[in-house]
Length: 124
Image (cartoon, rainbow, N blue to C red):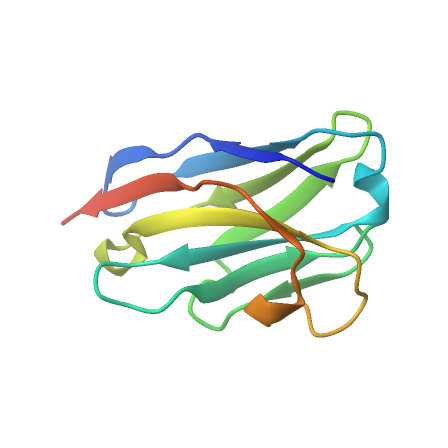
């Protein structure tokens, strides 16, 4: 069992930055690949970024590539999402998720555990 708690959301102006954190409970955090998803108003939950258990591989959606960076610190049981050059269309609830799989990490259904989400709002 893994419990995930996101933090770091808030209101920011377009062009600004935020760093989201996701703290995981348990001693097996390093066995899980981690992902970030988001759900905007009236939209489906969509993939944002993922990182392998070792941190050696990362994946990004086209919409955030070059602006967002995912990273993890296994010693702190934490995964991060650094978000730069934010746009109003990045407004959403951001969720972190954990997966024991090593492939298909851009797919929502491949994740085993989810956090409750943190709200990010970007004003124009």
